[in-house]
Length: 88
Image 1: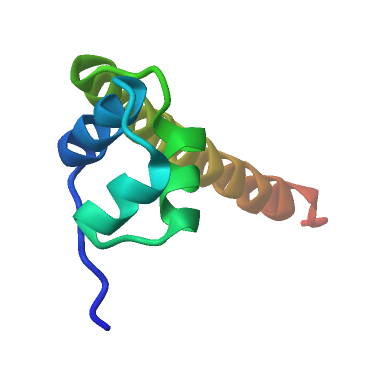
Image 2: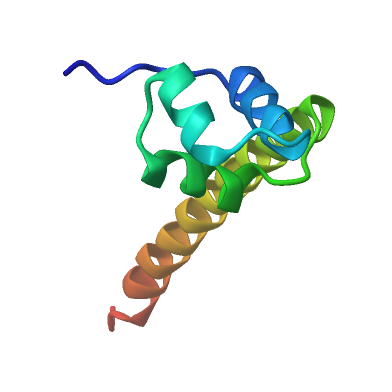
């Protein structure tokens, strides 16, 4: 069976239906997903709105870029320290 790809907005809409009173088994049957997927989504996206999710994604992206910059600088520092530590 082919796995379906849901956007974050669709996931939040499905979870809102669950919060409104629909049973998890009914949601899984309606959207063609497993129970495990439903519970994983609840663990990850419970209580988020679409705007909060977009903000979270942008913060995660910024965090990833900053970590990459720090890693590059640490590598440069190690290389320079290696060159300076040699006796000339």
